Image 1 (cartoon, rainbow, N blue to C red):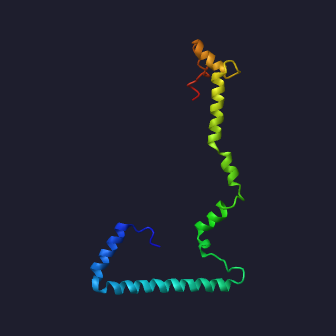
Image 2: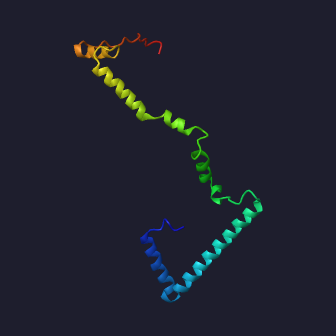
Image 3: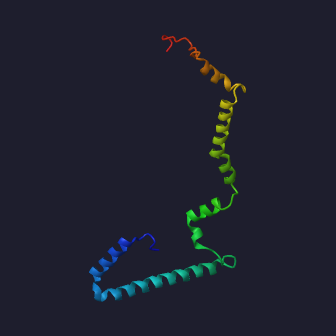
Length: 143
């Protein structure tokens, strides 16, 4: 419940409580607050038990946290693989694709004359100038 309260915030709250209520009344205030929290928890637990009993015999193990939409989505979509998320994740495995590409590049560089991949390498090595592609004629009157 108070998991997000840090130590500095806790010290600040204690100092503020001592200043507001004084050291004489502080134990009484703490007892009243603890009693109030205990009563709220008891009423919450009794309300949960009443709802479970009213739902009938198949809901004894009903968890009220499942009513939270985030928990519902996480439980329904992520825990079971009915939608095929594992297959989608494996289809987008970039590591495997990168290793395949790296292997293909290594084979093309180290193999010499192994097909079409060595032709551009031989053109670059021979020093011949690359021919720029021809552009279609441009007519300024039509544009």
